[in-house]
Image 1 (tube, rainbow, N blue to C red):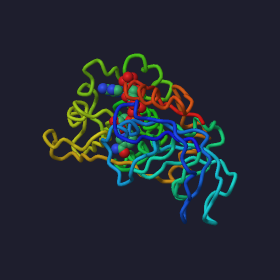
Image 2 (cartoon, protein in one colour; image 1 turned 180 degrees about the horizontal axis):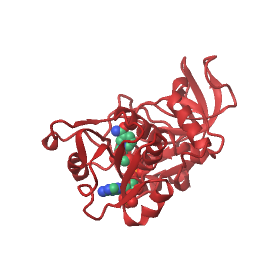
Image 3 (cartoon, helix red, strand yellow; image 1 turned 30 degrees about the vertical axis):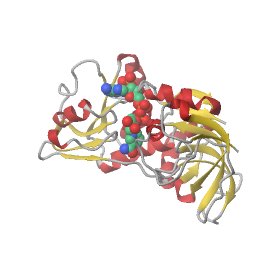
Length: 302
Ligand SMILES: NC(=O)c1ccc[n+]([C@@H]2O[C@H](COP(=O)([O-])OP(=O)(O)OC[C@H]3O[C@@H](n4cnc5c(N)ncnc54)[C@H](OP(=O)(O)O)[C@@H]3O)[C@@H](O)[C@H]2O)c1
């Protein structure tokens, strides 16, 4: 099968399109014919060596797949020919390739309203948003501030928070303010202005940006509030007593994906795909992702 692999860590030039054996599904796993693979920042972080794995080179790439079940090893879950989407377990990449192996517990039916390319944009980013809102125990009527609201995780987080009945404030650059309004954000904030301290104290902050944004997030929270950060661990220097702060690390979850799929099919959650590139352009896709300016998601088609 055709697969994007790397034989050493480095910049995007280490990505190669190679021929690899079709993987064998173990018990409890599915073999999926990949129709599209999502691109996430963790892909290029992994390529650069910032995410460790116990697997030897050559390593595969990517965690998000949408495709069709070819082989199943279990009577539970989807059958041969079913259209599914799912996230591989971290840190075992292997989505930028013609066939992928996933635990049956990590997949769900592909939302019927979505193409394969749109479906591949969903798993890792939407699960991250879902699990972050769960970790913060966000409830209806609460106020949440989402930093990076136009990105892969952010655009799902704002919509899932609205679906939970929260009041949503989100930061973005000026060119994406109208986009956030379209997604239902109550208060889109221009991140180039001095905002995080100007907002009324919030119950929850979801930080998809990190660095200075994480440091300043503490001051946007009410006493008893919750800060969830994604790019990096909490920097203890800035912690404010009485506020909970923790990092969430996403995990595959087929049941959550099934529920997210229902929200998508009901029209409550939209999937924004900035661009779909062919598998051969994986390096270009990662270069674009690395700019940190993608609106929604990038996807590779197979
Ligand atoms: N811990 C985990 O399990 C986990 C899971 C998923 C992702 N992550 C990490 O979380 C981060 C976000 O992931 P992602 O997939 O959402 O990335 P992404 O799609 O590349 O995010 C790009 C978005 O970030 C926005 N942005 C950039 N700088 C910003 C700033 N200073 N303030 C507000 N918005 C800013 C950009 O919008 P504007 O240009 O309009 O501002 C752009 O739309 C990455 O570091 C990723 O590795 C962690």
